[in-house]
Amino acid sequence: MNRAASGILPAIAVDRRSPTPLHKQIYDGFRSAILRRELRPGQRIPSSRELAIELRVSRFPVLNAYAQLLAEGYFESSVGSGTFVSSALPEQRMSVALPRTSVNKPSGPRPVARGSRLYPDFENQPAIRGWGAFGVHQPALDQFPFQLWSSLVAHHSRNPHANAIHHINPLGTERFREAIADYLRAARGVKCEVDQIMIVSGSQQALDITARVLFDRGDPVWVEEPGYRLQRSVLTAAGCIPVPISVDNEGMNVAAGIRARRKARAAFVTPSHQYPLGVTMSASRRLQLLNWAQTVGAWIIEDDYDSEYRYESMPIASLHGLDVNQRVIYIGTFSKVLFPSLRLGYIVIPPDLVERFVAVRHVMDIFPPYLYQEVLSDFINEGHFTRHIRRMRQTYGEKRTALVESLKAEFGRELEIHGAEAGMHLAMTLQDGLRDTGIAARAGRERLWLWPLSPSYLGEKHRNGFILGFGSIPRDQISASVRHLRTIISSK
Ligand SMILES: Cc1ncc(COP(=O)(O)O)c(C=O)c1O
Image 1 (spheres, rainbow, N blue to C red):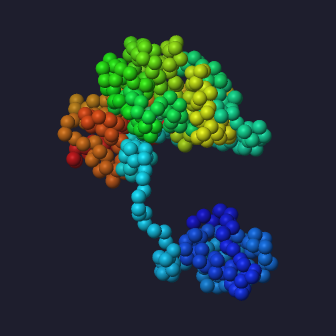
Image 2: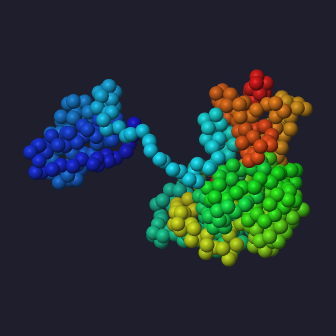
Image 3: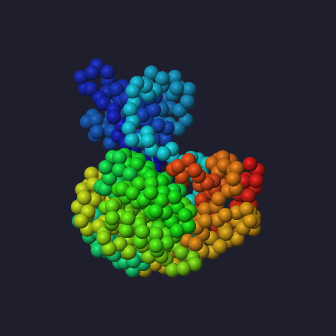
């Protein structure tokens, strides 16, 4: 029930020429809107004064109708807070009047085109959706400086710039893009100028815009195998053909890609921390990939989604920094390093493509929302961002060590762990014969949220295992959660 919401003016019409008195028309209008469930229990009713003004009638017929609806139990009022659709309406009375007006079941031809070719969305299945132990893409929110954050939000809400409120550059605000360019040059070795940066609502929109700009239907595009499913969905939605290229302990196998489809249009890669296996792409593979792209005229899309957290060495510089031919489109996000519902990310676009990216962006949502760009500009410029990354690197580093130790203690030699050197997740593979999706579904019933590895493969050949997030799990619950995991896997 939403008692806080203001009274929405319902679509109630009155006809002055009708022989039915006005108060009866108003009464009938509300009553049938409630019975048709256009107005729901608990919903606030506008004041009699507001409704009288809206309907251009005096208050008397409105007061009269309201009194009748109150008396019959359709409305309820509480002193000082207003009038509401009654929350105690007898369900039976409602359902008696419902069927005639209910909407028909879908029938007849209902063509859907690209949507029907998207991968079934395993990530949205209830079995893996909870918050807590092993949830993937979940940061340690208890460490986020919300107090500071909320004071920046309040400041920028109170003092908006008229210009920014009215219209923003489709690339995003200059101040925010400058802060990001400074960060990327210094921390990620990205060679970029402010005018190449476009602010987007997370890497997902970045991938989508990029695909719309660069690809035509039927274009083959290399993707990592296993890889990030939502990246593949973007390609499928754009009508492209994702070509799975295996990942080994040096990252995407470029020679295998050349054998499979030399003249692909692009390669999507996560070189800093391959998703989901966590491999870092070797220097020689990076050079091979850049050479291939230059030779065949392909693009490289570098998704640098969680490079800030490396535990055993300094962060590895981006692939973009090695590129001398402007072949790399670099994508970054604040989803991992801050939190995903911010929906803020960025693209570094080769200068000759900026106009095209802007044109596509314009069609999608014209420009990005203003408030959090301002907030995050301050957060970065005042040094909070770097401090936060440093603190989180420490926190996640400790959690990761505890997780690896617990996994080794519980599973011993049968366990293979992948990609624990960086990021907020690692991958563990299961012994042959165990099915990860079945185990994940069972674990979900016990409120342990496991992301199976096998859906990350596009081809038939796949490994079973789990992608284990360790961002949100409290440090002191890690060993108990690993024991729980062990019990569930053993009880197959
Ligand atoms: C490989 C990869 N890229 C990007 C993202 C982030 O997406 P977004 O910035 O849209 O939240 C994720 C998951 O959070 C991911 O796993």
